[in-house]
Amino acid sequence: MSEERKSDQYHCMKCGKELCQLDRALHRKMVSRGAQEFMCKACLAAYFGTTTENLDELAEYYRREGCSLFD
Image (cartoon, rainbow, N blue to C red):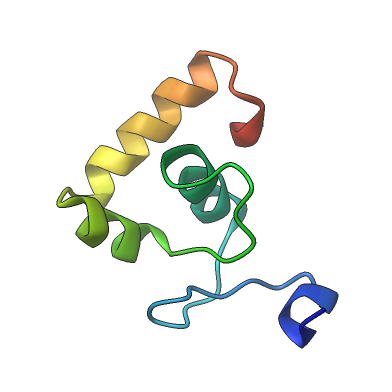
């Protein structure tokens, strides 16, 4: 188990930014539900060719629909 996982702090696998729960939830919803490494919202937006604002709207939609990743 990596030091990163032991401390419960996650960092973007692309840029190294510390991640929040929303970053991890978006990555799990859009890339892989079982992911152990994650991208921050900015890197995820670049990966999918969209904006962080669009991802915020998508996260709000998932939250309203009751997706447990966004609790």
